[in-house]
Image 1: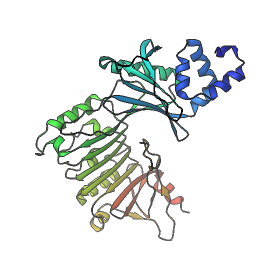
Image 2: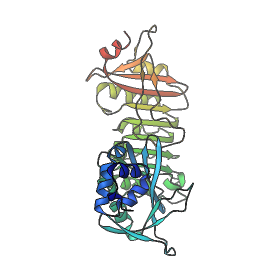
Image 3: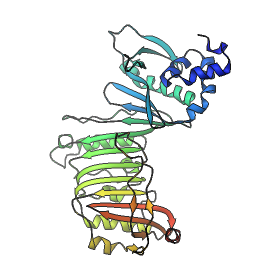
Image 4: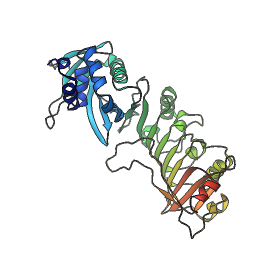
Length: 370
């Protein structure tokens, strides 16, 4: 089919009804075809929220287009299976890559890009560079390393060198990974090396069943934009002392009230947490009198309805039942930062503490309730 011979309206109608995986393959036919698709699908491409690389850390990377709450698979990137003979080749960003088609699922197929082990990163780089040119730099690109099952041996995620990509990692640390003796730092050194050699991450989800060992104060771990961590204890108040990102969720079985007091007072003084907008801590007991008395808490008049604060999540992990926003904070309690007079609301309910920072001064905040 010579698409270019059809009138403009017909060309656009045809392309509008193709899936993204089909547009990708068609664009590889020639430079002219790629140019036609980019021109006629410009508005469609603008509706793309993100391109998602979902890497399982073992043998495949799934690539999805995320738009209008829909995730559509473009392709899979896998190690080449030598017993397959149905490959065809395509030039992608100057690199010849072997492709084949997936088996139909609900009458839908997608291309499978293959690589030899020594060429994994170069194949992924070529595909990503093609997407940058095809979809444009305004699209958000995320690399998500998900669900690590470490059975006695620590698995370090694969992080390729890619331009304009944010990286998100889901890690599970079990006692057999860190060693039964918390003074053994072998595995922690490997984890520290991973963070130091990787770009600053956009999001981390971490399950740490043994957390008597914390990261170095200058670790890139604390620079991550969004952290969600489940740990036994806050023995060393690592995140509450060193976190430099925007959003944090901590689930722990025990904590020290002094760590919570120190955290709030350091924020109030302007000494730390300048980027922080949202913190949630789930714990085994609710902090009350000593904590509230020590942080210089202020109160909204009980006759007034306090405003509600929520933030778009830094990264949507596409959990089936997850909300795209942080849990709303509606509270009569607040504190004020000395350096700029900005307000943070504090809410305590059912063994949970929320801390949310308003982009408003105390005066602006109080006027919201007039």
